[in-house]
Every structure is written in C-alpha cells, then in structure tokens.
Amino acid sequence: MIRSELIQKLADENPHLYQRDVERIVNTVFEEIIEAMAAGDRVELRGFGAFSVKQRDARIGRNPRTGESVEVEAKHVPFFKTGKLLRDRLNGHE
Image (cartoon, rainbow, N blue to C red; front, side):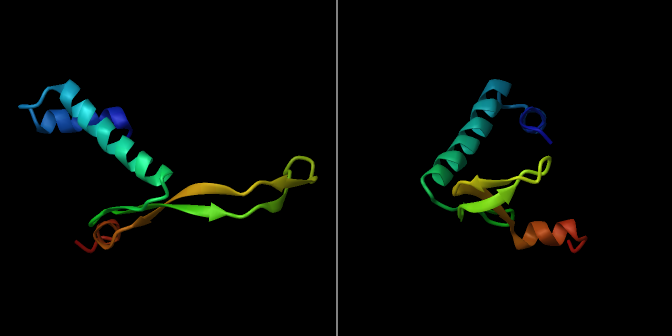
C-alpha cells in the first residue's frame, strides 16, 4: 500500500471527513515519525512496531562490478521492528 492508497482508504472509511483533512492527518503522522527519528528518538506504535535509527560504522566495501575495494562512510539507517500483534497476525495467530 502506498501513501495515496492509505489516504483514500481512510477517506472512504470516514465519509464525515474531507479527503484533504485525511491527507493532512496522514502527512502529519508521517512527518512526526520522521522528525522524531531525525532527532534520534524511537517511535513505538503499540501492536504495530517500533521505528528507530541504528548507527552503521564505516567499513571497507567492495564494488560488485569491478571487485575494487571502496570505503563506505559511517551512516545512520532507519530500522523497524514489528510488534507482537503484527507478527502474530502475519503468521496466522489472530
């Protein structure tokens, strides 16, 4: 599901809300998650999962085309860990 499909589904399920308001709500939720992660915070949505940022150290990588060694800089990467409820539903344990 992409963002526009999520917005449409929520708008369809909530006919009392204008689509532009649903779009603003979805965008605000995503922006808050992004801002919290950019600040190094962890975002937990109970039953769904937790978003966090992990530090990857600098390392020596390899260019897959040439086999040449290249330096890969340290970086921060987003990480998502599923919650128990989501994991159980995905595995058919409702």
